[in-house]
Image 1 (tube, rainbow, N blue to C red):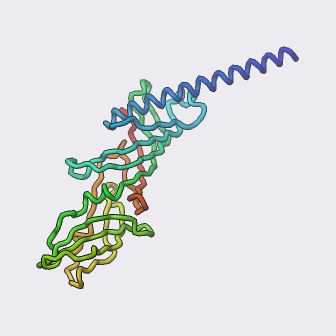
Image 2 (cartoon, rainbow, N blue to C red):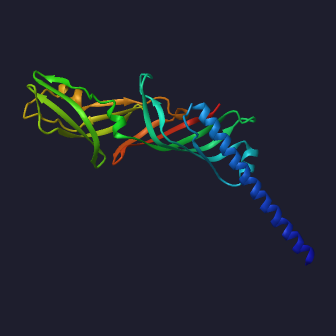
Image 3 (cartoon, rainbow, N blue to C red):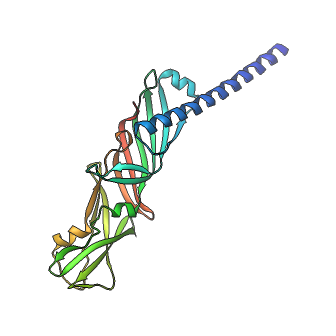
Length: 246
């Protein structure tokens, strides 16, 4: 009985040491992965990286990790032509089936899903915020974007008719969608009227409707869905064979 008790104590101690070693190793690996991702994506700050699953060391021995969560604050994505940038807030991605090379210089996830937010102020940069002629004697410009409820964006427009600025801006509810996996499109459900003036639809839509292409998301992930929310446009992203490093 005494020998059995000693053996059990020994097993418990070994198990405890393995758990400690495993947690130390995963903490080190998370730091290394975060640094590599920062360099690969040219990020201004170090991202959050969390490696899920236990034990970590046996996953490493097999050359594949089950699940890695990545968080990036204030990611600067290319805005279509590459000359401008659009800020994406709180980008969170869940990477599944991450395989890495023997020297850990590269890592690729089989699939990835995630969420992020684009603020209304940031999206407003893509709208026509300068006065634009929509009819003889009538100019208009988008001055604000906000949550319109039920997944809609409220687009607020100021107009000037025959040189006189209308006392109150007009607004229209718009639908926001993802096009081609890389473009956020805002399209008015109806058309606003300026002081009762009837304007050609195609002219009005040059003001109310706009879109923003978003290129270069981390690892090649793409936009999936988008919806208006209180603090901005919430997007979901997805991808396959997503490169984390290398």
